[in-house]
Image (cartoon, rainbow, N blue to C red; front, top):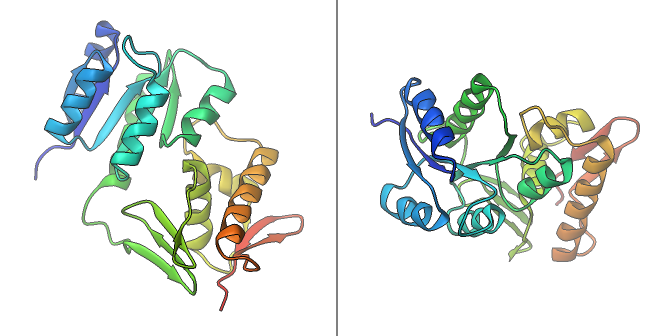
Length: 230
């Protein structure tokens, strides 16, 4: 079996070297580049399993790169790295499609744990079904695409993860804390109110696709539950 390949896109050559050595000690292959342009070419040539993507690159915004790569490669694992610790920056990174977000300076073992968790989710041959199907609603876990009433529903990364977390266990209530963990497994957790806002947006988008049909119910004092309709 070939080694998982991690692409590091960061203009800090010293940091990239350190990260590369760290990841290679875990048995993973690493390819590091310093610019978004080189990252684009490496992505096409090497087809990495995961990407560590810096927010501030000399030739492009990491946010723009993340948004473009997520649209072109739905199954690609993306961890954004940034010197910014502002929670809103983290929310933005997750909203545009990053799977995880890590602020510099970071603890090396935490980075390894985040990458390991991401590679585990990306690993082929998992027993998880490629789609979750319900009456009027299909969630494609490989393409990260949601169809409601036969129409594609454009969801942010956070909205998609919330829907998948709920739909995997129909009829089971999830607390806001559980949904927060589903959005991101790392140290940053959205506040309860943020979860409420994201669920409200998700419900609105689904109801716009299929008017009068709501797959997500509120459980008073607890959280939310996915209820198949039909």
